[in-house]
Image (cartoon, rainbow, N blue to C red; front, top):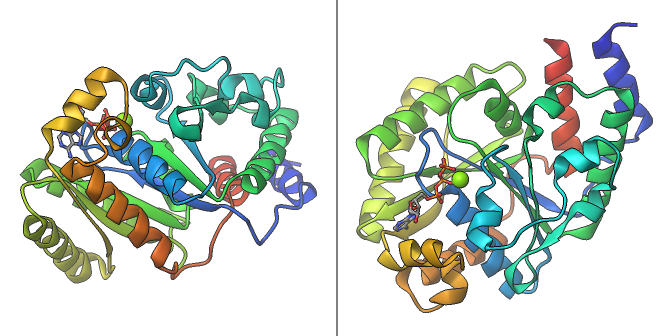
Length: 292
Ligand SMILES: Nc1ncnc2c1ncn2[C@@H]1O[C@H](COP(=O)(O)OP(=O)(O)OP(=O)(O)O)[C@@H](O)[C@H]1O
Ligand SMILES: [Mg+2]
């Protein structure tokens, strides 16, 4: 039995459920520093304020963005679960306002080289997380590396954060182009929605989306959704410095209000694709890896 077949058997044995309880949203970007982690934490807080249970998975391995922004030091990280020292549900850290998160640690190599038992543990843990949360937000690294692409292609709902900077727009397009060519990606199964961040006004945000959508429709035959715009707001920078999310430290700031609208928009819309659970997202991810 080759490794790919072994993995498929493990995944089958784990009875990855077709129906999930949690909605899994992957947050990504073509270019770094455009605001993914801020979107993850503030969207998380706003969803929590709406009464939903939220878990953020920090999949930007090695950089520990979420814990730094939350100002909370986790005791354990994903590596402890992979190594079998802890159950996945025991490595959840409580962040501000009860938004929970899982620190990725330096998990990236770990994820690529898991053995049968480790993989099995991880997938079982993912199923438990699906039951513990209403929404799971995955904060990925930026760019078109294989690891990011695999995460993005494995998910059913993706938020692509873009800013008005010309390089952000071209990098977003490059990511979409790479995604479109990625084996296993399907437009039907993965819905991509734009968040325009650091805009000077809402019209600029809408225009940014329209521009990007025009090119992807024309050259990639792919339609994007629009989730909304977040204004450039000095208070975000202050909040990051204070290690306290803007939605908590400055709840009436322009950007906090925009995150509130974003959360309302997301919960008010139905997904068009097939909803995938966290366990399914990960099992897709490992399928791809093992097929290489
Ligand atoms: N709407 C905004 N207004 C002002 N500053 C912002 C806004 N959004 C993000 N920033 C600032 O931009 C910087 C990058 O934000 P953030 O860390 O969330 O980006 P990222 O995409 O997660 O970056 P990385 O790719 O490095 O993980 C931070 O210093 C943050 O304060
Ligand atoms: Mg980040």
